[in-house]
Length: 252
Ligand SMILES: [Zn+2]
Image 1 (tube, helix red, strand yellow):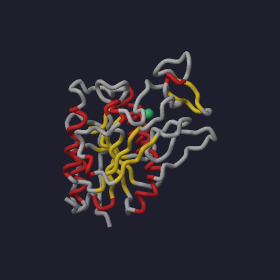
Image 2 (tube, rainbow, N blue to C red):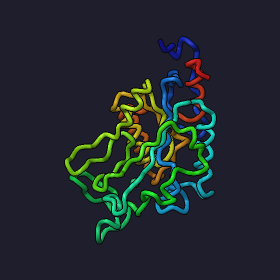
Image 3 (cartoon, helix red, strand yellow):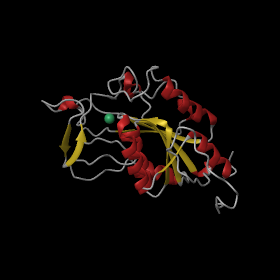
């Protein structure tokens, strides 16, 4: 049984300058919680075709804290998602004559942002970042392999030609491992991290986003993203709060 926050006298301390953690946090059991490292691939980093914001130091500012979290083994079960598109993928602007990257169109009746070509299967930019401790990953979930459907989320494709969002199998994998909660970090906060965390919550997992260990494509979207993911049942926390929450469970 989880102890009430009042009962153990625990009070969340917000990280200075980060208003993005929930005011109250309950314990996180590391034996039943998976870390999901989303799309930490060079194509989403400086020098790649679709870099997230705020990584002028060639990605190390993004990679180092995720590497530190993985190496800490605070959450021993670690999985990654990997954007992995065939050439000519439906999400590429180059697949739609007359369109430019970041144009919005409809695909299969749903809004689709068009992107620069990125994370093409087998290309160096599609690899998981080599400075991450990849040996710690129990599973790597490749997504976006259907040429006709994008896949922001690690749990479901975006809408496909039949109007459905095909499952990837990640929810079943995690349930078989006894997982009841997931902690998401990585790239990008406003797309693949957001969709992965929201789908996790919809699938019945307690779902967290590590706000300070994910980065957006569009920084101006942060307020909207924060409101939307919280409205969909996702909890926000930062790296320090994660350590606190694991300690509360007796797991660290
Ligand atoms: Zn993609």
